[in-house]
Each structure stands twice: as structure tokens, then as C-alpha cells.
Image (tube, rainbow over all chains, first blue to last red; front, top):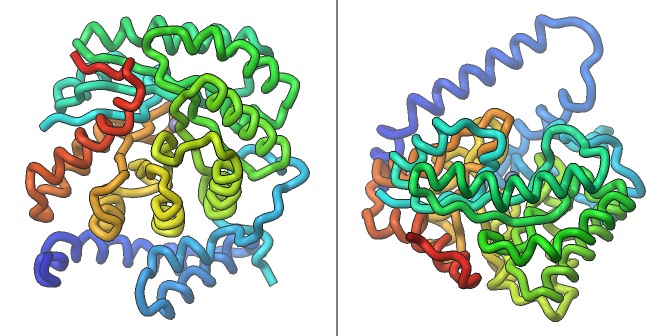
Length: 89
Length: 267
Ligand SMILES: [Zn+2]
């Protein structure tokens, strides 16, 4: 596809998601109380998005991923939340 | 359009979904064993589930002239209970004889624990002993990258395992390369929120090529779309891909992988 074709097919969809993202961040700003680790993880993912020169989807996924290789001794539960708590500073 | 749905949990779908998939061009459905949304209390629950996968669901699919195939295992979400997992592994061989069973799956990891790894290795051993195809589930979200690396290490360490007979499912942009580079097949799962969207799936295929990749909807009791594969085929057409390329991805590729088991016959 040409860049023009990509814009024709996907610009409105991406615009919609971009505004949703902005509104989510505004909503977080207006809310009260301490956030959990997902807040910092999300900011880290935004930084990965804006700094990656290419392969941005991969960079965002990696910023939210557990980078370690050691198996856990026990499962902390069954679910996943979308961000790795170990990355918090 | 014709396509094969290689990964769908039809036990949690309605009969209307079977009909809709058939109307959309589905030529066959394959159903891996998975977590029911709750933990089964004993091996008897799995016995009944395997009967459902190998007897009842094929009959339900046949009402719409749809061949139905299944994969058997205890899923990683219930593998933390090693006693239960060993009991379930013990009953799988008798079900491998049933005519719609294609292999062992979907095995893999969930939270990347030592117990899960041990049961994953036991499943791989079972598959090797019975010369079965393998379908691997990779973990969700933040656990996927680590889990995929651990799974690849375990598979590569077993010299009996031929990568071309193993599909590693639910790949995303950060895992698809390592799976294909190691010689395994890769599955891209189309979900509304997690895993991949149609647009991202096609992006991955455009970059990796049409080689050993299949698409699946993995529809289950959660938010999911049983028509996600044909929807993605339409999205490919919108991008200008040829009918041949689309057919190669959504029909030819799953046919090529699944036909490694001679039981996979389309009517
Ligand atoms: Zn599944």
C-alpha cells in the first residue's frame, strides 16, 4: 500500500483511538487517590511509543512485558493485567 | 471465500455460531482443550470434557456439514495442581484413539511457573511418545514474551520434537519472529482487546511473509468473535491482497499444517 492508501484506510480509526487515549489520560488526571504500577507502566509505554524509530508496536509490547527468564515458584493467581509489576522504580 | 478455523472453543458457543461460520465459508473447525473459566474438581470433569470434544461437538458441527476436530490436554491454568495434571495426562492416551483427535493442545504456560513447565514437559513427552502434532498456547499480556522464550527452550531441548509439527499460538509483534526463526509454525489470534486485531495480524503477515502462519479466532466464553478470520480476510482484500494470497493464509496454511495428521480430511 502507498502512504496515501494507508491514510485513507486507517487514519480515522487511528484518530479515534488517539483521542480515546488522550481522554483516558485526562480521566486519570481528574481522578483521585494513588495509582498502582499500571500507571507508570502506561507512561513508560507512551515513552517507548514516541522514542522508538520503528517497530513501535513491538517496543510498546516489550515495555509492558516481563523481561526475566526465571520461572516463578508459584502462580500469583491465574490472570494477567497487561503490565509487569516488576518494572516499577 | 473458504477458510479453516484452526482454533475455536465451540463448547462455549451457540449453534448459531456454527451456522454463521459455515455461511462465511468455514470448511473445518478445530477445537483445542482449554480452561472452562473455572477449575475442574477432579479428573472426571476432564473425562467428560474430552467426551464432549470427541463425540458431542463433532455431531453438533455435522448438522452444518462442518468437520470438527479436537486437541487434548490439561491447560496450563489448571497445571499448577500437579496431582490433577498427572491424573489427566493418564487418561489422554485412550482418547488419542478417537477419530477426530489431531494432537496434544493447547498446552503451554500461563504464569510461567515451575509446575506449569513440568506439566508442559510431560505433555511434550506424551506427544513425542505417541507421535502427535502439538498446539502451544503462549501466556497472556505481560507474561507472553517470557513464556514464549521458556516454551521455545523446552521444545528445542527435546530432540524428538520436529518444529514443523508444532504450532505456537497467540504470537504478537514481539514474539512472532523468534517462533518462526526457530522453525515452528506461528498462530495469530484475533481478539477484540488482547492478542491481535485484523489490521495488526495482516501487518505481521506482510512483514513475516505467508510462510508458516495461520490465523484463528480462538472464540470462547470471553469477548471474542467467531467470524474474526473471515473478517480479517476481508481486511486483506481491502488492502489489495490477491484472492490467492488470502486463500493461502486462511485455507492453504492451516490445511498444510493440519494435514500432517492423516485424520484431517475435509469432506
Ligand atoms: Zn484457546
